[in-house]
Image (cartoon, rainbow, N blue to C red; front, side):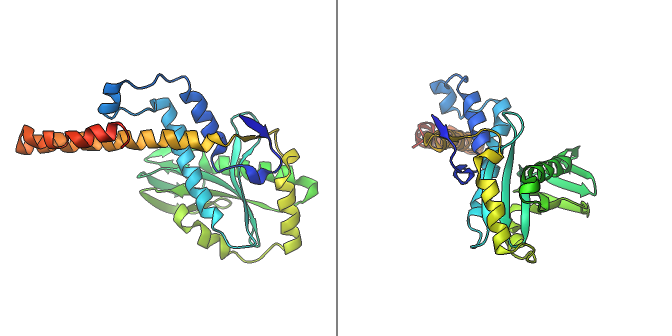
Length: 266
């Protein structure tokens, strides 16, 4: 259930991505008992990217929530078509930043000016980040014309090889984000920050939005628990068969109680 949005402050990190994920999951058949026991993921391959994206936005949202007084963060701001949003916007003494979150866990990142590659594959992340910032600047428009700086925040990459930094887009790892923001030189006065924040908080600034019902994050938490349980089971099965290969069937049987408990999320 959703309700009309009264303030964009009400948007939770990853809200739009989670809504899309749960909508897609609603058409997925429940796993059989055998599938649960053997650690088959509840996520079809096509839905996994939505899940990972949600985790990334939630992680960055948690970082932004801990920024000091004077900084305000907005999340999952709807623009354009139904499935399009700005992951995060941050407003503070150091300026206005449109953040595009990317969770490339365990993958090498290579950047050189206009080129952004993930595990050797070129991605349009830089172009998209600039587009997001320009969208926000247009929405602010004449009401509060201030520069909007594009950022890409990477969650848990294996490495970042910055051959040449992009001219306009700041690319940074999530763990350095808060420190980098608070160290920006002051460019916005408190009254300007208040005015910009008021414009961004106004639902009429954005595409018609609703506030997801309180069960949204509860449903996502349940799905997240299932996914993590399935992964834990997969690791246990790998460990069990490795132990069986090394020490016989008895070693595998020793793990059965853990497998049963994990399959039921205990």
